[in-house]
Length: 441
Image (cartoon, rainbow, N blue to C red; front, side, top):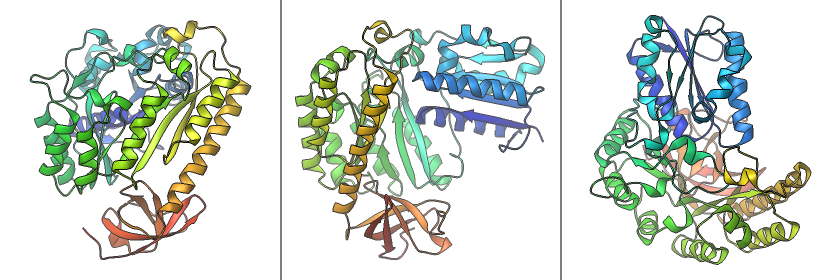
């Protein structure tokens, strides 16, 4: 039987799209190759959000070409969207028959792969800036995971000065509500117990539809339509954390009390240079509103350091601001130059050494905040989605509804199920727990 390998770099949206490619290939009679198996077709779904992500994408392409000389190579994703010239100059690809599929043409990828034997390599870049509709990419099953990602939105129109994404993903496009709910029901029928609603700029969901819709109204309807599924919201911009969203997170049993909100800098001057649309004072009020509504909820924050012109004073302002906020963890990123963005032309680039030390300080703060949050939850009980495999000590593992990593003893019958546990103690970054009630399903 013919085999296909799908290599995925980058975000949750890419992971969802790759799952759709696998579904379509399987429907065409292919099997998905393991890491050690040779494949007739290799799809590389690339990322370009940082310089490092772009480099990793190039490495993945080179490795596939070197190790699979007879395979058909199909390159898609954000690096393919902006790196066509680099790919044409890639020495490993010279003389090699390959295809490049732009982000707006991903719905054509599998059909292109199946007809390549007759037509040869194709370049289908599309025009991402003119894209009007989201690519339809249905998924049957999201791998062997208990948790599935569901892409409901694509594109971004914020144009932060450091970010290449609006140029690689185009304007905001939303999946109509009926199609979102249909996909959620497919995931439920396949045994997935939790769905993460995801997008490139998730809070813009529905603004392009006619009539306009909102993320809150979708979340309301989908959680009622599939009451046996837990839902998480992947990431929202600060101004998109509405009272309606918070009420749903607080009151709806199958919507998890967990949000991720990007800050990027805790200094107002740097925020302005980044073209972020809020001040630290406004951000602080939003975080306080979240914590008032959900005092035991999990709250993650994105922070970027080493932005051009970020002085020690700017960084210290940011660090102090974060120390005074109540949150659960940080995702920390060092700034990297992305050609084609406004910030790439800014002067006063921060040295690699300085960025490294600032990243370390922020990650130390993140560890401190996470441990404080975990400790505050000891003796509480929460439902947990048990993952499909055990940890290295042989314990069951999973995340509570408020995103605390837990390990506990239990039978294999609990794998890929939801059970309620009591949190006992913090051990090496995770929480040891015990089963409190019988398996919930």
